[in-house]
Figure 1: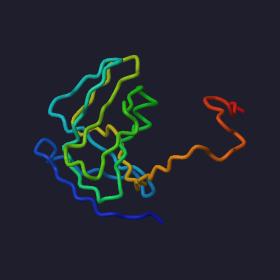
Figure 2: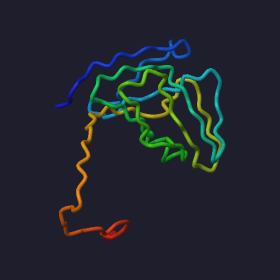
Figure 3: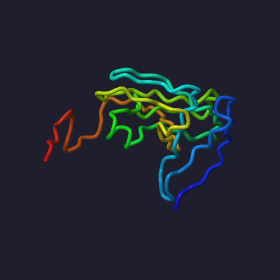
Amino acid sequence: MTTKIDVRVQRLAHGADLPLPAYGSVEAAGCDLLAAIEETKILAPGDSAIIPTGLKIALPPGYEAQVRPRSGLAAKFGVTVLNTPGTVDSDYRGEVGVILINHGQSDFAIERGMRIAQMVIAPVVTLIWNETQDLDETQRGDGGFGSTGIR
């Protein structure tokens, strides 16, 4: 069973005619974010750009929105979200933007209304740091990058 929360959304003038973010299937975790651009934007290989969505959101306290890549754009074109996942905090009231980067070999055209990323809403846990001189021992210990092997 999924949890439903009420999120207020404001459409900006440059995104007023675009649909609100929608889920691609009944059990999808992320809803699609659309490009609210006036003209086609070409991302050359290696280029990045902030693409506006034309939306401002008001998340309830205790939640964040994570802006994530769309798997199809990444797999087919090498286009992904640069700061994956991008975080939209509950107290942010500016326009949601998507930082796209083209890791592919060819120019990539971003067109108005194109589904460019997905947004997942997640609960936030706030830490209370408890400084100590010792940590519990574990089997792994301080073994880091690659210490558990690949098989």
